[in-house]
Length: 492
Image 1 (cartoon, rainbow, N blue to C red):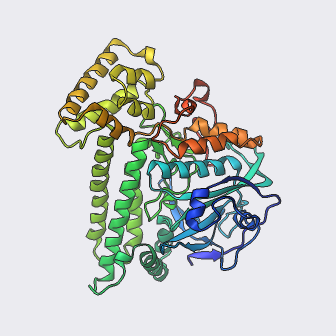
Image 2: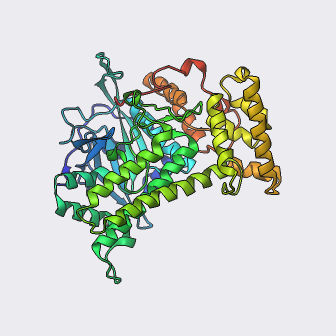
Image 3: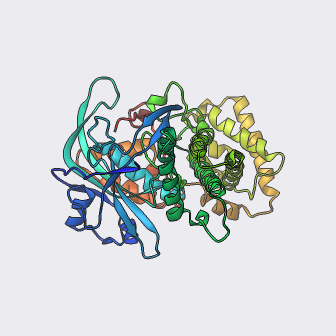
């Protein structure tokens, strides 16, 4: 009732496009290059001894509405690897063929979405954001037909498979499906399995804590991890794009990189998902509240197992408090301040974010420049229309920088020390949408150099790298409305 055993569908011509040597070494693979037999496993042409591939069954709320049973429609978990330190990592192929949950689809994935997932999951890891990882990206040598714009003009695109790695891919939706269908015994068994393998601090012990209390304490921990994850999203300007409950990890990891995007001009209402363009439910500024809404759906799924409903509400309140504290801490670090707990600090940050939006200022470049340049120079560097500032806006910026300089001076710290600390929290390189699209366009033509160059730069996002200025530039005007550079569909 939790999963179905399934075999990957073989492909015609496996082609290695990207290989994560560092992660492979951690997992015990050859750190230099995978063997041919390994490639065959990671593209779905072979199953190694001990593997029992399966697809998970789950449900979910999609765009606020209960969607019923969903499940891994194109993801197949090969099995678990136990690392030398005793921890476990699951290997999951995305795009490896049909499963019982494919819902009449082909179970495949196209190169553009697979490349984006590989790229972003590794970039997020380097940025310090809780995330799943990516081990390999392989072309299948086969075409996959997709209607990219949902406009009735499907085309054949190159197929690809990405191998995702995480301790577990269990989602909120895994619990929701059992609760919705009143499958209470599987619901309890699944929760006990997750606790035993991933949250042992809540396993039955000598303290003889009631099951209901243990489950509520587990939920509180999930709320905390989710709050930390979303606070990091906000810190780096990441927009998930499709925060359905089936795309939320109980481990507090970013999963399912679909129509995601990165803020360029700071705009809280921006969403990268064309499906969400009218409602903007999953826009950047809504992410903290949507995460809370999703956690409330998980709480509802746990209600058959938790007698004290107030304890579940306590978990939701813990999310609010944790997110507020984490958001304050992370943005204080971006500003080079030890905290934002003074009465005037809330207005200092709020006024800054308002000014960034009014002037269409690049979030990443502005915060990076703030530690290196004086006031107006930072705005000029990061603004998409530096000559469009009117006298009133210029005066507002000057007033804000005066307040900020005074606040920073009160800490009594040398500017160069503050600048070094700020640079450790403000990346200079992020996987901008247009950079990813350029790598996709080149890879589609058989040129992998742009992808590998971008991956190398993103391995050290906080360190300025010689000759890599093009990766730290504002979005060019040609990319403002270009498909893949500005917005994406769920088609993949």
